[in-house]
Amino acid sequence: MSDLIKLLSDAVANQIAAGEVIQRPASVIKELVENSIDAGATEIQIQVKDAGKTFIQIIDNGCGMSQTDARMCFERHATSKISKAEDLFAIKTMGFRGEALASIAAIASVEVKTKTETSSVGTHICISGSEIISQEPTACPVGTNFLIKNLFYNVPARRKFLKSDRAEYRHILNELHRIILTNPEISFTFVSDGNPVFQIKPENLRQRIVTVFGKNLNQNLISINTDTSIVNVSGFIAKPERSKKSTGEQFFFVNNRYMYHPYFRKAISMAYNKLIPEGEHPTFFIYLDVDPANIDINIHPTKTEIKFEDEQAIFQILNAAVKESLGKFNIVPSLEFEENITRDAHFTSKTSFKAPNIPINPDYNPFEQSSTPKYQRNKIPENWESVYTTNKSQTPDDFYLPQENIPTQTSLLDQQSVKNEERNIFFQLKNKYILTSGKSGLILINQKRAHEQILYEKFLKLLETRKGVVQKTLFPVVFQPAPSDRAILVEVLSELNNIGFEIVMMGSDKFEIRGVPGDLTDIDPQKTLEQMVYVLGEISASAEMVLHEKIALSLAKTAAFKIGKHLHEEEMQDLFYRLMSCANHNHTADGKKILEIISIDEIERKLN
Image (tube, rainbow, N blue to C red):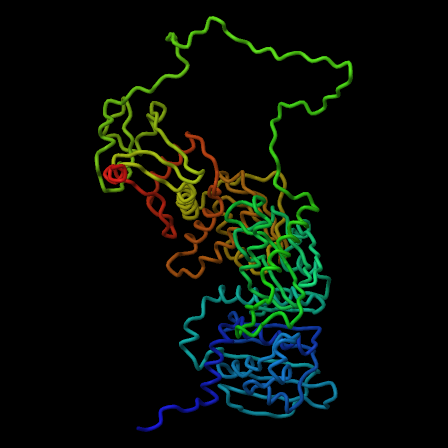
């Protein structure tokens, strides 16, 4: 039998490694910018075209590389950061494995120009698919200039799985934010398709956070600073009113390295318990300083998952530190007291007190029938038997509740004329579900999803007819979104104005909100737009939905009832009728179930 095991070629091995290290254009930018930081750069420029799919350029003013180093850096596991296994537990640099450049060169065309301060000329190397095309001297400034073209050109299967330009662009911005927030002393410039996105100068940490996420965040930031023998915690948390539907403003850093840690995130969320609405997440930028010997950053190729030796202790420290910072600013759950108590009473030795006077009726007899009782039992409708008629269809007629003096054939859409004569019964369960009865049995409705579907169909109609009614705000609201949200907002700006918003661009990075749709006058305009842009970004990957549907869905999700909203019976009844008037009352636009019918037979089986 012939031998079966053989060594892979370097090109194939590099492509396999690239599958772990280089997942998308954002991965390339992350690795190259981190190399620039390790090289001591104080100015870094990033340029991309087509969200990095066709063109990525990273220019820095770091120490540069010699001719030999420029050639060696593309070899697998070639690194200047470690020399023995013990060095893995004393790492203070960003990159150290020596896989990034070899992986990039395996799946793209790469050019590098680099020069050290002591060299008279620089080095220019061209590589494509792990093969060196040319190497020659060149004139260039001190530092390194990487040019990456046609990412995944020789791995079409990987290129096919890349998302849309907008989605990949958001990934790039997310990676840049993680790096920018840990290096406030470095200047960053980012240009996309020839358009400057940001140019950030060196600044302190608080200014850097505000620069990235908007000036409106500044007034909501609370500093946090706790030193212990296990970990030093610093950074900023935000007031509860800054909470968001997304986790896009939650950042953990350890030894100036971004990390993803759900366990520590839970410690922060627990500290905000009962301070923010259910389903929302706090904003925080927390930096941990830990002895490198007590962490392992080598458990994942992207180095974003980190293992701690004292995770439980750090969990408790984080939770206590956040609670302490919130307490310093008196941000605690409020206690509700009755308002009819005397708050400014001054008692002296001469103060006299009177016994309370309780009015009673000595002639009252509870067993006597009053001629005009305060509470009366409703009369039983004559056609009540039809409530128990089994019908598996879920048409609007299926949910009709027969009432006295209302013909059994009356459709739900025709009941508006006799609504005042009705007395339908609705119950709310846990401030989340609406219960009522129908022909087939018990109807259970998710009130938030029902309201979401009602708003979705309304916004969709307004987008198609372009007849939204604007309600002017008393004072215009200036909104400065994050760079990742700005492009999305610009794309849908005209459509938002068609449905009733009045939003005007103020320069290149600010918007002024002058009006909102007439039916949404009780919303917070800025927060609504922030959440809408987030939802719009999340559903952008769905190719089946057109732009109008995406906008309507994102707005409906943002403006719908919050979880836990108490509704009066009249509100539940109105919501029910409006839902039944929708073209689709069974499922939301993104496929989630709105209602469920529990048949009489099923109820009887459960009670047998």
